[in-house]
Length: 275
Image (cartoon, rainbow, N blue to C red; front, side):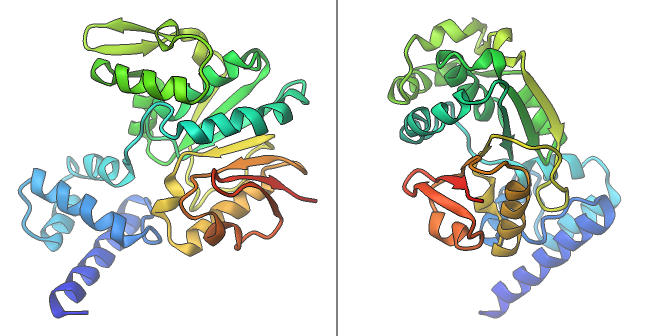
């Protein structure tokens, strides 16, 4: 590692430690290859030359910390972002949920409305929505509050509609939302059974038992240590044969850390808790 990269790595570590010590938000075990471009983009927007200068800003100017935390927690999200995975979920996970009179689903690492309302639409179309409780958690209160508003840009509608049909949609996307100006709002009935709460997979413990857990992609931001911890929390939060769906980019790497899951669909990141 060259001197410049070593210095940058040191500055990032010091910055993340300062954030943890001062505000309690722990990014120390997040993937630095993902953290680094987020920091650079934030610095460019705010005309901050160095990471040390950014550290000075957040420690002495309270107006910087909230936007920085949102920038670090944010990730790209789209409605029915992985339609093939959701189509497989309809076939493999829905029958399991049908076997329960009142199933509970945990949607973890939420950063946007799209992470939640696509699943709510799927449950409505499978006649499960009325008896299912959704628990939505995310580490960032601001992003979670924005997601709870249940809206998306009208510019994205055509793209989302295409995803909806590819994910096995049986109606029309327009029937689940209403356009108001340049945004679409999801229908209130979709949010009727949703509980929202701030929750950190890196520090918080299991808080309920869930027949299904859907992680919205945040594990890709974690180091192996934090992924292992998150999966242990998921395992402790499920009954025997409970279903887990995670992003499919790293299934073998992740599931090798928790041996008590049966692979249902490796390609689509769907697993089942074993006894």
